[in-house]
Length: 416
Image (cartoon, rainbow, N blue to C red; front, side, top):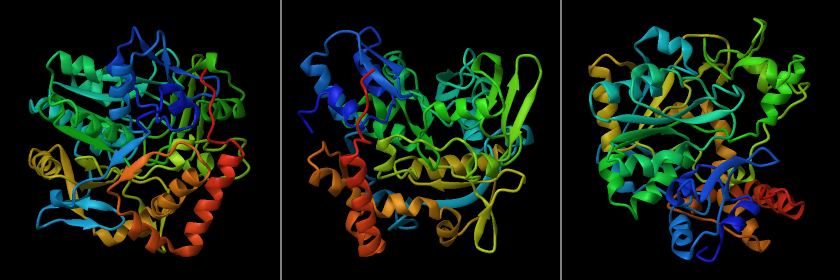
């Protein structure tokens, strides 16, 4: 892993597209751009010197992720074999009904971001929001007001590089919180091992349960399904304005088109798919074990299965660190969020779609190694317990499926 250059990380499908490498190197030397295949990737504007490259390798979540230490859960918490460190867990939602309605789920991440700003715990929130120029795309956002945080409340199913601003904010001496994906949080945890400023200046990392990062082609196909071109679109909202809320397109001339959550993602007749990047398929932590708080959907259940009928939005708030547990408690006491009971045993039925990736991770990484492909180092995610839980048949399927993808070149990416 120490010998991989940036081009190899990208070309072998290991880049997560977080943007931290560009933040470290500086925009004059490295920029994040969309490739011809719709992936957000670093592009060198000049040769990267060995010292900077070594720094990039030390923080890149595409090639190295280390799981949480079991000691962080404390005597009252648990290190769950599948769902990771849990100090406390609740159903929760934003107390502000407008935020709750507009957000992708219960608005808990948005409400916590606003609370962090307004309580003075941080100076800024680093997150993403829909691009003002190209609404189907996503931009990194530094927010210093509640209104700015709320502007990024909806889900963004597509490539983004939220960490491009990290070193700028560190250099300016600002304290900030990250609202991002699990791989973004993993990058910050990697950075903390080599940059002492992180502990003091990035005190909170909040995340989702992630389904993976698709290309912009998914949004383009949805628009084309409605007979619309990108130039006509003024608003592209994946979720929100209800829970789960429709996938909504608004045009510049006042037309609108909506798809329900099930129509958008579970109708096999639709001419699009969730074309996630290869790195997401081998992710060891799509559930945010490294975050202070994870905020997945708290789906309504019927007959033991999650349903997607419209309802008031609800998250599950999983506090994974002492700092995260304290944040949830203080935000609830301040009236920023509301909490209700949730049992850890409910996770498996509610979020069982995360089990195949979680349980089969070691088998997938083994397939990469057997194929002679560059292999990331994922440590501390209880791999043998996951493999035991997966069983022989499921592990074999994960191994062979990954091997087929590699032999078909599905992990390879163009550099431009």
